[in-house]
Image (cartoon, rainbow, N blue to C red; front, side, top):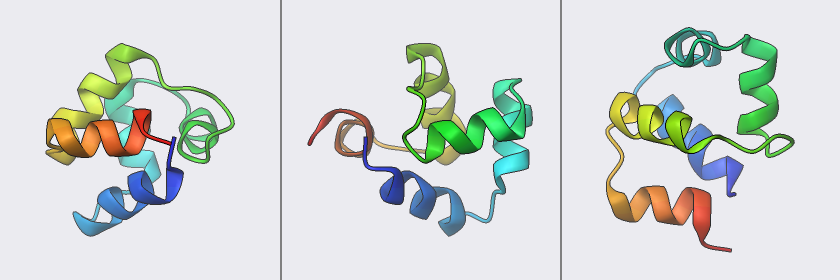
Length: 67
């Protein structure tokens, strides 16, 4: 996962880690660990991130699946 790209997308639209953690219904510290690549995102969380961050399928692939 390219955590810097995920963080950039979040910051670009002005959403905090707290906002996203509430949307994903997880603790903010857990989200922070996921965003920093310490814990993997579940597929369901990636789908929610796609929606909230308005990510294209290409951007999802770039952030989460391409090395």
